[in-house]
Image (tube, rainbow, N blue to C red; front, side):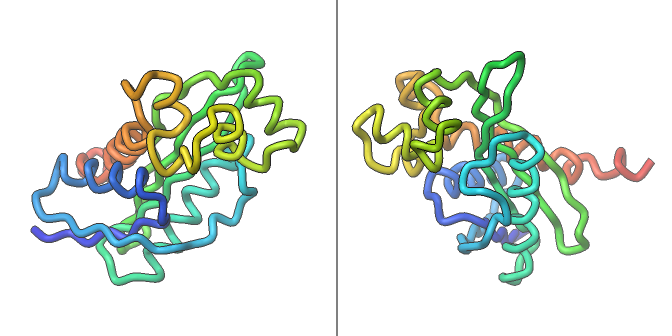
Length: 178
């Protein structure tokens, strides 16, 4: 079965993760990237805001292209016991408007990064990361998690896991109909 996916992002690491997630379950997947507005701040600083950005991206992407699924992936930061945690939230929506939500593994942010975000000296995580590590557009490649783990876990991996878990209601639809 040929499945068309509208990805609400132009970020290549996210696009690769989205494609890989769908291909884990389907053999013929066509992912088309589309620039959409997240409707949230440039750097979401709560889990709720991150979810809203992913939801907006998924629905906006699905309304812009003829597709079977729209996908939104938003990277954000939330606090757990006063520790800043980096996470990606994925929303997958089908043509009927039914959606699933998934999260990536979370990871602690170095204090120097979170301080730059909170103080406003960096508008978004990538800006703080590039400044600290001397990289250019790290978010398009391995991401902060890749830099911190020696590429054992990358931004593509985080996207993959978030999208796979967002697909759970579609993979097990009979359980959501009970």
